Length: 197
Image (cartoon, rainbow, N blue to C red; front, side, top):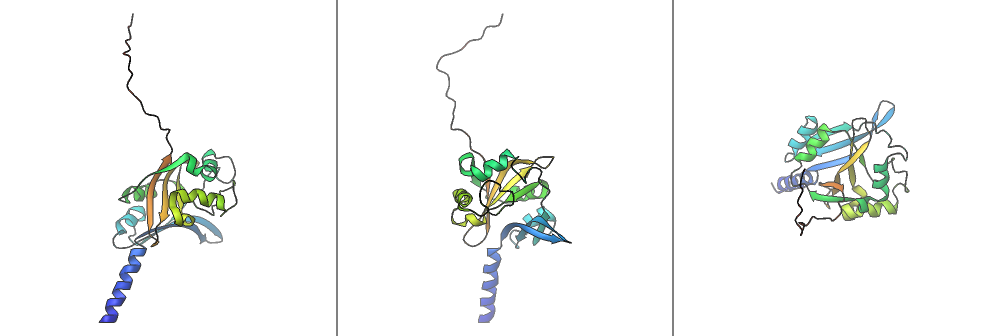
């Protein structure tokens, strides 16, 4: 009986580690390697995987071809790889993963990580980009994923999410976007009147 309790506790703890886990990498299709996103869910997050691909345990979605990503023609990718923390910020952490699940199900996107093949601006896996990612994901920066939405012709359009791992290996999702200047409007002190002739 004690063995069964320990086994149940171990299984429960291992399930919590992979409650919702997003990874990006390459899968083999015939003789080719294709970039893909893999999402793993457990019984508490199975609805998200179901939304994304119709399977409550595991999803594998091929990422589409990214036009103008391989090279230096995309201004957005240049900004992400060279000025990430200066030009972009985390808006807030998602308390429900439903918006992310809908995004992953419906949108065209690519995921960029520390070792992205699209990084033509600094050494792949280098300390410079790792330090930029630390501003978003702290000590787990080496597992960070930048979720970049593609426009209708598959060019990078916007940074929508940053995915980080916590100490237990669970994926945390943050809405991300461009930094907005700190301007605020104050009411005019002088009344302005417009007269039309």
